[in-house]
Image (cartoon, rainbow, N blue to C red; front, side, top):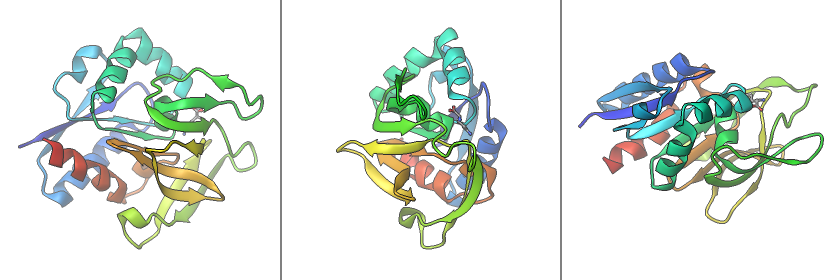
Length: 204
Ligand code: GLN
């Protein structure tokens, strides 16, 4: 059976995610379609959602304006698998914290039991690449690209840490939700997408 992966499509690496989803599916031998989600109706019938990076405040504003945010919150809470990268991870977090003021900001979806600090690496390390060990996807390090990235500074009880960097969590999973603070869609490496999609395929 074919699966349909929705991609929240206001901003960010939308076509990059789409490309990697298709590549991952073909490597896994899974028939899949992708659907760009900008309106509530687009959520109908999807088997999973990918939340790309970008500017979390902008994405949240648009998603809210189009009624997608509320509907998505509901669907993820009911078990729709979700994969957030960078700003997408911020959207999912229960607690979003400002780096400078340490103030707790609004949490757009608030579905994943993690605390996340926006722009964690500050100006000096705004963007960087690193070879990251993620044992869950295999022994070969993953080329992780961080762009004004956040960091997961707390994980709740039901959350599994899949990778850390300098003491903070950069890949986490809770049930059907997966979050990375970097951009796997900017590489040709499909392993994180495969890790997500394999589980989605098992559910349908
Ligand atoms: N700094 C952005 C934010 O706070 C996230 C950056 C990204 O997605 N690359 O929303």
